[in-house]
Image (tube, rainbow, N blue to C red; front, top):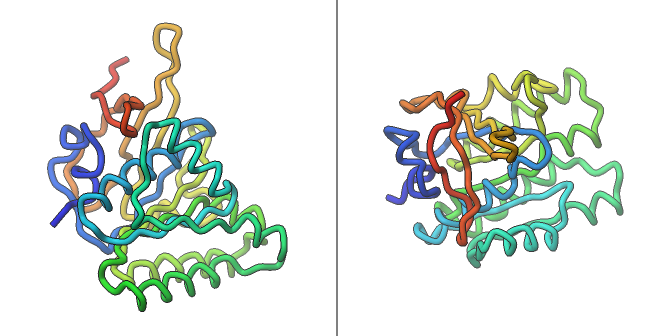
Amino acid sequence: MIIMFIDGMPGMDRVLTNDVNPPYLTLVTGPPGSMKSSFCLSMISNHLRQSGGFGLYCTVEETTSSLLRASQSLGLSLPPNLQITDFTELRNENEAMDYLKFTQKMIEHFKRERGDAFSVFILDSLGAIYSLTKVDEEMRKRMFRFFEFCRSQNLHTFVITERQKGESAELEGNEGFLADAILNLGLDRRNGQIVRTLQIEKMRHVRHSMEKQAMEVTGAGVSLLGPLFD
């Protein structure tokens, strides 16, 4: 079996001592410019290229063309078994659209069509959905049910959301509590330069480093260089 995290990103084997199997829900957080989408695209593409499985990437705020340009700038070639579905045009056409319901129907469709080969789902981003929806107790319950639905489909689920430095991972609801893992991407200033970082705040069932890791864009996506020390 091709495992997700260690096989998906160079340098991750120095951060994790073991990996996980689906169902597993990971929250990828960080401020603007911390490469949340690029991090996910890089890892998922590497994983799917090796496993031959199928992945679905749903984008609510960034167009497909923008994601493709970002991938090209990383030197990352997206595999044909990764489908990107762009909700931005639907958002413009139907402001009252129920994104969670629509997304769930898409997942059910591809599960019927692809079966167990459909193993990875990415939602980009949770904040965009919240910005288009009234966030109340009912919405938090629906988000809980949506996360449980993703688990019931036996998927590696990645949910991207914006988060400022020092902000709680709970965000608008109980996402931090519900997620199996929280990966916090950030920006550090070192010797007059901006360094992009990854820090694992939480990862159920995995022994992992708690140190902040430096990230680097290589000619084939994102890789981890090692820990940053103050």
